[in-house]
Length: 296
Image (tube, rainbow, N blue to C red; front, side, top):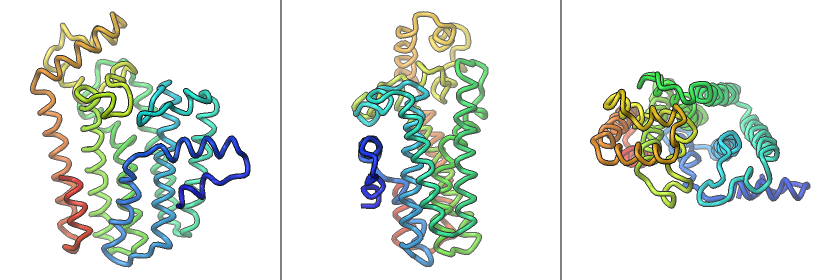
């Protein structure tokens, strides 16, 4: 209902763009996590719902901007904003969504959460800039990869759970515990997403697979593939602009037919275990069990 209200504006074209972007499906995991994180102490929906809505809008804004930057044509099985209306409209819509999310957060009148929201937006932007400036760079380490995804992905999940804790007036140790849960879960989510870009299907991903390699983004499976085959490697040839489509297919085939997938899943599992460990300080209730189940 709250997302529907966001789409109700006087300008018909803006309303159409908002509906296309905000009603395109998705699991709505982030809003659900805000509410779960807020259930351990003083559960007040008058504060939690505006922030849950704001975070879903912020997440949507980052996807709209990502699609414009990458010139992606499909998102969640539907044409992207930039595909239908053009890159300029997509950028402006993303800006509008960011402003709307900030307005909703301001309604809480909680200065700490408002500031945290702004800091997270800066972290996401820094992570995306890091990715843009490191495109087609073969000299990236696992540590640099983790640093990049901590900004572009984990920071948002950290915001989700930390803001829920703050708004429920949780003790500081519990705020830190829920923040750590969100951060580690965010790293795990991104690692799994990066694996699926090699071994998933377009139907499963809602977008073409192999898109990270096509954009010159070195993710964990590609880094492990380069470590395993430092010289004769399709990723190296691809980044040197040799027979792009063929080398993307070869890289995906090598990852699928090796233990790299299992190694990447092991990394994701480790971060999920860390996320669950963060919850050990919190009361054992239905919310905690739901958070553990999500991570497992």
